[in-house]
Each structure stands twice: as C-alpha cells, then as structure tokens.
Image 1 (tube, rainbow, N blue to C red):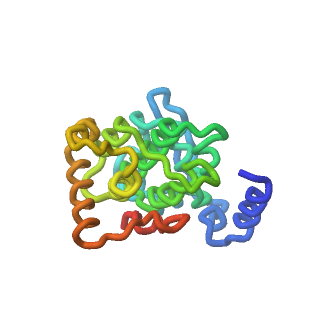
Image 2: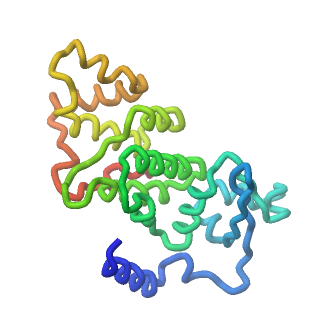
Length: 235
C-alpha cells in the first residue's frame, strides 16, 4: 500500500463516524475468544461482535456457558485468520496489502483468501465475506488488468465447505468460464482431463454458466476494470 493510500485510509477512518469503533462506549462489555489449538486469546467488544455475527450473538447470549463466563473457544480456526476478522469488526475494512503481501504468490494468496471467506461462512457473517470478495481485483498483479485463478486444491476446499450458490462459488465459476479460454485444450479429448480434478458440483456450475453464455447471451462480469464485485455478494 502506498503512503498516499495509507494516509487516505487513515483520514477516512478518522472521519467516518459510522465505523463500529466510533460507536463504542467506555463501559461496553468485552469477551475473550480463544482461537486455535494453542488457544490464542483475543479480547473483543461483545456488542460489536454480536452485531456483526449471528454465531457470536447466539453463543454469547442466553444461558449458554459461553455467555455466563464471557469466553468462547474456536479451536478449529486459525488465529491469523481470526485476527483479520477482528480487524474488520472494528474497521469494516480488509487490508488487501496484508492479505497479498509484497510478493504475491497466486496459490498462497488464494488459499488465504478462501480460508478467510470460509471463516465468514462459519461465523455467519456475509458482510465480512462480501468485503473479502471486494478485494479480489487487488489479488491480481498490479497494473496488468490480469486475474489470477485458484488451483484445483483451493476449489476443492471451497466446494467441500460451502453449499449452494454462495459468492465465492459464483466467482470461481465465472472466472473459469470467462478467463480460461486460452488455457482449455483445443483437443476435446483433453478437455475432460482439464476438468477432471475439479469437484463435480463445480464442473456442473461451469457447464450451466457456459450454456447460458452461449445460448442466452450472458455477459462477462470481467469486461470492466475493476469488475462489479457486488454481483457476487451474498445476501
């Protein structure tokens, strides 16, 4: 992130009174969340996290043990990923620079991105997932107007942990239909091998969208730069 962009972001955060952190009160209650098998502790304001996530709202209210003690454990999640969620809770911003790093390795970035999106589904927080989807154009190499694609292993991970037509599935499907023209073999015998590693659901999604493109005139969402990522948002 450039110094100018960083300064603009800082100014925006300082002036935006709609940010959750601006609405905190001194006496607001906090809760402690232990994440991962090492149980790394995060302290977060209860009201904010419950407003952001129905998962937390359910767990931290009522007569549940978590509510009584003000503690919650997420042993199957990764502390580094949860930290990104906590930052989003307070700022409503996902730092794409930290997500990508200075050296962008496509597979590593897509793995991180996909795990964060799956965390948003686990926490029942579509707003966080949609904010992540908005960073997709930044994942590509700067200045080349070029989209990178997730590898087969990442697509499998996503399809195994999501259902229906969620945003990340719809994005992956659109990317494979409109952005792989030069990658798909011209020999039809090799087409099967090209798609062999993808989950069956993904192949069906790709086929359905490809038919819509050919027979119903579906338009590519990648015509403009940046694309309208809101088209992939979850409700």
